Every structure is written in C-alpha cells, then in structure tokens.
Image 1 (cartoon, rainbow, N blue to C red):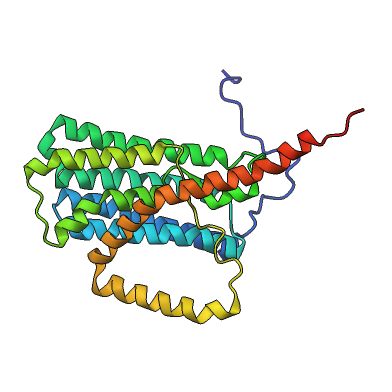
Image 2 (cartoon, rainbow, N blue to C red; image 1 turned 180 degrees about the horizontal axis):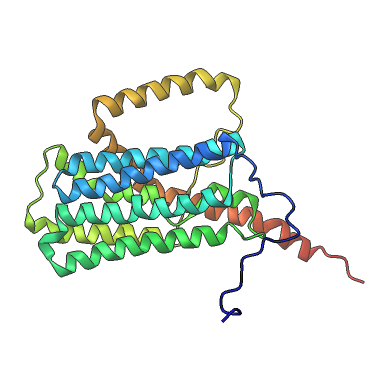
Length: 277
C-alpha cells in the first residue's frame, strides 16, 4: 500500500522556488482589444435572440473595427505572440462566423425552417475553414513577399459585414417579407463560397507603412469625412462600403493575376538563357 500513495518529496534540484517573469503590458494590450471584440460578438448573439437586430449588427461592425486594430497595435508595440494569434482566430470565428449566421437566421432565414438553418451552418463552417486555411498559410516559407498584399478568398471581417447587407437595407426602410428569404439564402451562400474560395482579394495589411509627407493632411481630412459619415449616416455608409467592396473583388483578382505573370517572367527568362555546359 505504501507504493500506491508515496509521500510527497520536493525536487532536490529545485533549491529555489520558481519565479515567473512579469509580462510587459505591450504583450497584454492587443489581447485586451481582442477580448473586447469577443465580448461584442457574444453580445450580438444575445441581441439577435432578443430580436434587437440593429444593435446586434452594430456590435459586429465594432468588433470588425477592433479586429483591424488589434493586429496593428501588436505589431506597433512589438507585442505579437502565438497566444494572441490563436485567440484572434477563435474570436474571429465567433464574431464573423457564428454571430452573423445567427443574426441572419433570426432575421429572415428562419422562414425557410431547416433549409435556412442549414445555410446558416454553411456560412459559419465556411468561416471556420477560411480561418484554418489562413493560419496554415502563415507557416508557408515559400510564399512570395508580394502575395502578402492579397488574401486567399474573402477575409472573415469582410465576409461578415457584406453578408449583413440585407439588414442594412432593412434598417433604411426596405422591407423583407417571407418571400424574400430565398433571395437572402442565395446571397448568403454566395458570400460563403467567396469566403472559402481561392479568389484573391486585397488585404491592405502592407498599406500605410510609409506615408508620403504630402499625403498626410489629405488622409486626415478623409478620415474626418468618413467618421462623420459613419456617425451621421451609419447604414447608408455600410451599404456603400459593402457594394463597393463586392464590386472591387474582380478588380483585385485581375491585379493578382497581373502581378503573378510579372513574377513568373524572370524565372522563365532564366530558364531560357541558362548557359549550357
């Protein structure tokens, strides 16, 4: 019986108790922003259950804004970490996969009963697959530098915000009756396909690293105008941004193909002019 319950004996090699090093605040700040976005996504789900679709949509929009900030704050403060990357992916799945799917189901897809629920599942699972593929591509050492300007497929925040375009129109006075549910179903399926597709879209992550001095004041003015439009005409602005983004998807694909052809030209010429032994 003594072998079953041996007495506790401290490790003789540990002469001193372990002391964990304090974590600098710059490592914590980006994760705090991600957690705030996660709280907004959970709150959006609760508001959707209560039928308060307008504040639910606003919560998802603000979560998308915070998602665009946390990564830049982490890189600015040099506080990037593996923990933060995993937390960001989990928050993105809930904020931009689960929350929009449940909001759309409660808004109109529930009229189609089981079919509407299946479409909501497809949208959420498509977002999970897109995020998993994004995380896997980060570890690709052979990825060219210019491809960092493009996403493979529609990014998660853009997919969530464009999928809620019918709700923006509803808040502006356009009524959606039960007969419009099939149209919404087709639209949500199209957005889900764009999310998991290999269609390249602009990322914008490398923009703004170096801003020309003459562009600083115009950028400030544009920022003030955009902020005023969002505050004064929030859903009109969201409709405009969603439509413009969908219109620029084929333009981004064309730009990607053009740069891919330019990138392939040097390798082809090297093979042609390679000296023979």
